Length: 204
Ligand SMILES: C[S@@+](CC[C@H](N)C(=O)[O-])C[C@H]1O[C@@H](n2cnc3c(N)ncnc32)[C@H](O)[C@@H]1O
Image 1 (cartoon, protein in one colour):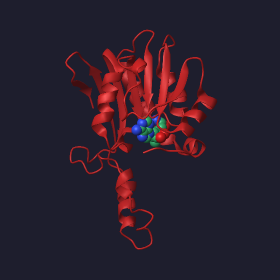
Image 2 (cartoon, rainbow, N blue to C red):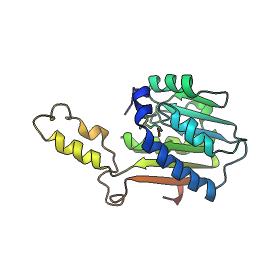
Image 3 (cartoon, rainbow, N blue to C red):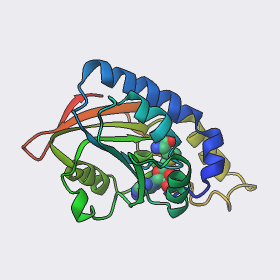
């Protein structure tokens, strides 16, 4: 689900930044970034997490970060405020076909607080996989259980909010009701693309 208010998002996006920082710190301790790496950030939003958190954890010798987002407004804002010669933001819906030049192009994929917004999970995960080079890795932060979703659900059953929240299930994480993920609210999944066309989950 697209978001269209970059300035507003920037003011409230402290949780993604905090969680991305923790996950990236752990990733950087336990795993190696490739030399001269080409990196993608799926669902980069206003670009602030990409430029002020992800970038700070990379070795200086990284090649380039591409942030992608389904929202043209987010992409425009991100390029204006955080674009550099090494950070570029592009419009791309990750459930749609990968642009040819980005197929198998990336050494590392990153995503924070985005995948839970997507209903076509299989398409998104296939595309993340296909965007990576052989041996490339990804670090994905996905919102699972979240108290606020329960509040939305309860409100949607009240007379006052029923109309406004009639599509409530569209924005509830597909992992919110998961039995496996029921106790934690944020999950980081780290995985490597191996040669077998399957996910080799290293940690989660
Ligand atoms: C909650 S924001 C997260 C932004 C940023 N990653 C962060 O951690 O601050 C989620 C972003 O995902 C984008 N998004 C939603 N569905 C998408 C899709 N199918 N493809 C690409 N981006 C998508 C939204 O437009 C929004 O900017």
